[in-house]
Length: 102
Length: 84
Image 1 (cartoon, chains in turn purple, orange):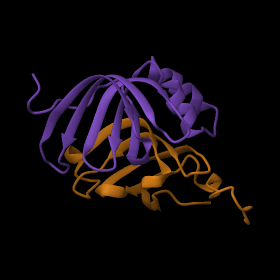
Image 2 (cartoon, rainbow over the protein chains, first blue to last red):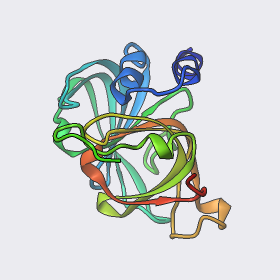
Image 3 (cartoon, chains in turn brown, orange):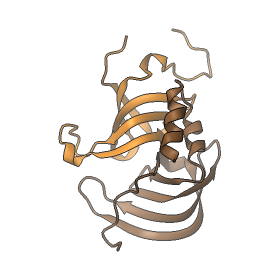
Image 4 (cartoon, chains in turn red, purple):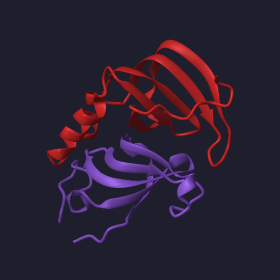
């Protein structure tokens, strides 16, 4: 799956961050933004600015330390602006569910 | 140790060492540096997100695995392993 493909890239030595993102295309990723927003969905593509195309997206608001996590939105497809992307996490294991999620 | 203009930071010395990064918006992560580029985008392996500022309080940490961090959001960098 994504994890083994990524591990193989890393085994080589010096890894470019955008290579790792490239390996995730077609898989679930978890995007953390610079504020408290998080997006979990299928990565369809990205560009040099880390603008990201996601499908089947769930948007969460996470109020940080010990705080509540809430599912805010679900979207079929979106273009996410890369300027406030903070972390990209290849998602074999999905993030914690929101309080209001079933 | 001089770096040419436009090449960004030389992080070769820090490769495969544990680093602790403070990010914009109060996020705090630690992991093993596996790669970087000229914008300081970072690949971390075995990454954990540290909550409450205490790495020892393990129940507050989230394990993230292998992650990519956008260089734009890195505020502070600490090396947890000694640099040769």
